[in-house]
Length: 106
Image (cartoon, rainbow, N blue to C red; front, side, top):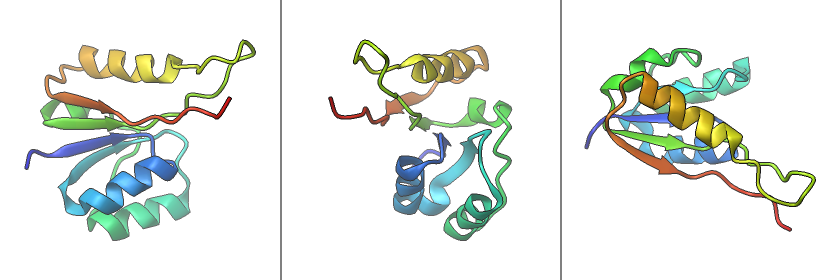
């Protein structure tokens, strides 16, 4: 299996990490706390730099799990998904994107 990256380490991102464990090479989430860093280490068996976008260039698959909160008009705010896709593309990522972001119920 190709190496995998995770963008967003909330409930969904952690679930993906539990499923794929040591296959995960990179995790990006600038809002991570120390407890979540410890969990990531336990799941993957290594230290992750949660603010490093450069490591994603070499990966074969990136799973995007960012919030898509409801806007005032009732639509999902997909701006974080688009921002993630943009920085990955600008950074030279040429693999597969899997978007696994959730939306609030309407």
